[in-house]
Length: 357
Image 1 (cartoon, rainbow, N blue to C red):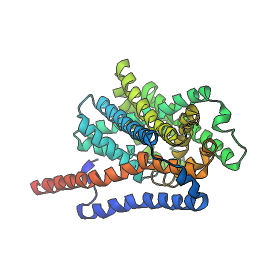
Image 2: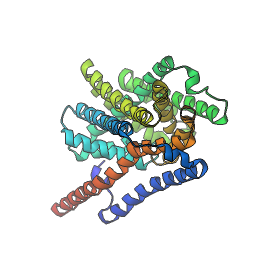
Image 3: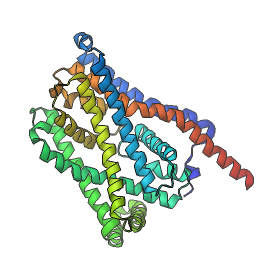
């Protein structure tokens, strides 16, 4: 596959880019407007004072978000054996985050990450292997961390705080999605580190049946990617695994701590461990969001799920807005700034190659 062929056509790419940005923004704004109409309380807004305490913790939330990007950039540097500079690794990370912001959560930035890495000088086959590795590390983090959270926080504080249909539905959705993540991670573990050839043969056999045959080509490609990734990962030393998983944990925990900082800014009395633990639930559920970057779903889920800790629907909405600005909308802004130049450079390269031919 030629990565350059994945680039949008030059003149059309700008319009397409802004449409992709506009759609999630409109979805998010519509949900926020609906929530404001339902929950607006002038007293809440009058009670907010942007004093030194509030401003400092909002600044801390931004620092935690920088910590997330530092962790992901560090991971790209480690995965490429320092072939990428910090600047180039950061650019790849920002492009992946922008892709995640404008595509459904199930798609994410990994689908295009191999193209971004290839454009930074990483051979396409190796870039595919590296993005498969990031996928495995992210899923492994969730599989390992959820049981730890369950041990640290009483189950009732995560799901049993009321008997509403929302809580029941959230609990059901969480465990279904977590079970899927667990099975997917187990498949990746077996297919990458234990028995790659055996898993590939098994998958090809399963998808040889008539009802599943239409996906056989993609499954064969999946098996091939697992084998290739396995060859790379099985030779890695323990230090490399600790570094890449540490960077993964740093990136996710930093993202969760953004919410802790915002609670300290606006509702300092809220139990911080519970605030942190509920972020694991939120992000597992958001993995199944059909909207770009979880737009709309995120705002509604946050205000409803954290409502019992805030005791004010209006204040919950204020915190949700700051959360989305810091952890989501910023990537749309950054993407709008760097993607056009990135696409133009690729388009110019194609034009130069065509002239040489």
